[in-house]
Image (cartoon, rainbow, N blue to C red; front, side):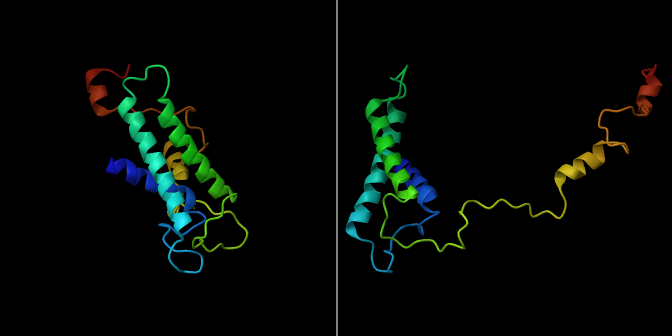
Length: 150
């Protein structure tokens, strides 16, 4: 069960980490997290972990559909996370500082000095840029020895 609780915590951090500093332990003024916010996050975690655990345990008995109670727990937890991430519910927690009005998300950056795609095409295409165009073919020496180049 501990792995389900940790996975639920990671999922909560992944969703709320764009708005709030995670783990969420401080209110917006730096004091201890208020009891209602703490209880809400615990409930979301408990619902996610319990729902995923019940689904995992009951999956062998559910042939045509998911476990109804587990599905309801997960749906309620994800609905609460959606409301928090959309701003409908504002947690009194320390927010991530925004850099301008740009939306925050994962930054994907290629740290290489040159493109690997360009290197591929440079290595496997001819001077005309055609990958499968006409080529001159030199058989390998063992092919010539065995007469395979005919």
